[in-house]
Image (cartoon, rainbow, N blue to C red; front, top):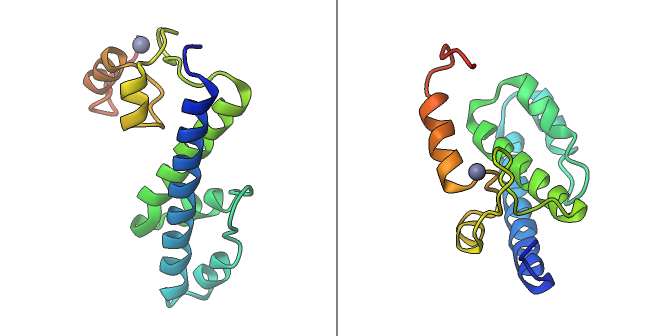
Length: 130
Ligand SMILES: [Zn+2]
């Protein structure tokens, strides 16, 4: 791991800030809904930690907040990787992801090369995986 504690602290702070922003967006969108189930769900959106409400959102298939929910999930996963000490390594080739890339995109799970390959091979859901 080439990231020092200061770099990790910087990313952690940014990820937490972004997560709080996303939770707020999700909550206000749910609260504006005319569907009582959505309004109730808004009350389960907490300020930090418990993001189990994301599962419910996925089940409800709410396209408005689906993107936010997915980003929040990626942020949670990144924060977990930081805690576990596995953060900063490409999930495909195990190489260290360059600091510049992580800084631009803290939730990145792949190095640039693997990401490009992934996007090329996963464009269509029907693409067979070898
Ligand atoms: Zn890679």
